[in-house]
Image 1 (cartoon, rainbow, N blue to C red):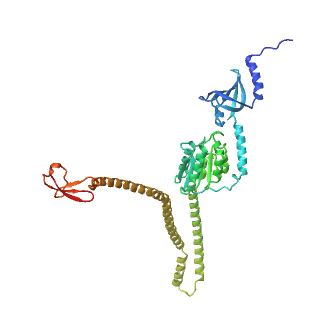
Image 2 (cartoon, rainbow, N blue to C red):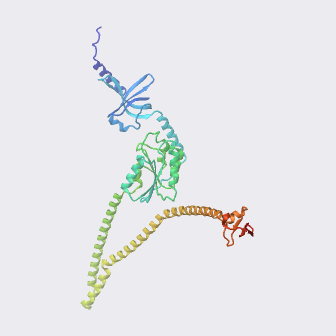
Image 3 (spheres, rainbow, N blue to C red):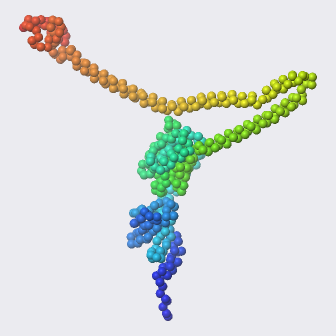
Length: 438
C-alpha cells in the first residue's frame, strides 16, 4: 500500500479551516481577559484560564454593538465564532457579544424582582398624562454627567422658557439609591412648583444600572405625586423604574423631548390654525355677502309700488346698514379688546404668583436676620453698660474707699494740694463727714 502524498502546510490549514469554522460558527466561552489592546482600529486580547489561553478579537464594525467593553483582569462571557488565520496558523475567536461573568445570575434576580413587584401592583397603576405646556420641570440626575447635559441641550432647543430644577443624585454605586430617594422626595415639595419629574441616567452595563432596580426606588417612583418620566440607559436597557414610571424614554434626550413641547412644531401649528381661521372667516364673509345681496334683491321686489323712490332708497339703506359685515367686525373688535384686557390681568396675576415663592423665602430669612441684629445690639449695650458701671465714682466707695473733697467739692488727688489746716469733706458710701488737714 503506497503512502498518500504529503500536504503542504497551507493546504493542511485550509482543510482544517474548512472543517473547523462551520463547526464552531457560534460558541460561548468564559474566562479572564488578559493583555487587552484597544488603541488601534480593532480590539485584541487573550481569554485565559489555568493551563489554557485563546486569542480573541473584536472587529471595528462590531464594537458599537457590545454592551460591555472587556478590560484586563475581568472575568467575562464571550460569544462569537472561531476563525483560523491560515497565513499565521493561529485560531482567533471573533467576538460578537461580551458580558461580565455572573450577568446571567443578575438577569435571574431581575426577573424575580420584577415578578415580586408586579405582584404588589406597582406596575399596574394608571399612567398619568404629562402636562402639555409645563412651566417648571424637575430633573434628577448626576451633576456633570452626559445624561444631564443631553437633557439641558434638548430643553434649551425645544422649550427655552421652561424653568428647570435640578436635584443631584449619584448615578451608580452605594450612594445612588439613598440620594435618588432623597431627591425624589424633595422635588415633589409643592413649594418648588414642579409639574413633572425626569429621572435620567446614561447607558451602562446591567451591573451599572442595578441601583435602578432597587425595590425602594421602584416604589418611590410608583408613588410619586407628580408625573414622572424615566430615561435610564439606552434603548436596549430596561430597568424596573421604567416599568413603574408614567412614561419610559429610550434615552435621556428622548425623556426631555417627551416632557417638553416643541417650539418649532407649536409655531407651525399656530400658523396652520391661523390660516384655517382666516380662510373660514373669509368663507363666512362671502356667505354673508351673498345673503345680503339676496335680502336686498328681495326687498326691492317687495317695495310698495306707491312709495316714492326716495323712501324706498332710505329703507333699503337702513336695512343695508343693519346687515353690513362691519357691524360684526366691530363686535368682534370689542370682544378682542375685552379678551386682551383679561389676558393682561391674567398675566399680571401669574407674575405676582410667580414672585410669591421669592417673597415668602425673603420673609422667612428676614425674621432670623432681624433677631440676630437685635441680639448683637443687646450684647454691645450690655458691654457698654458694664464699662459705664466701672467708671461710676460711687463704685470704689462700695468697696470701702473714701473720697476726699476740697471746700469747693472738687476731688483731692494729691497730698500737697491743700495747706495744713484746710477743711476737707470726706465721703463714704452712706454719707459725708468734715475734717481738718494737719
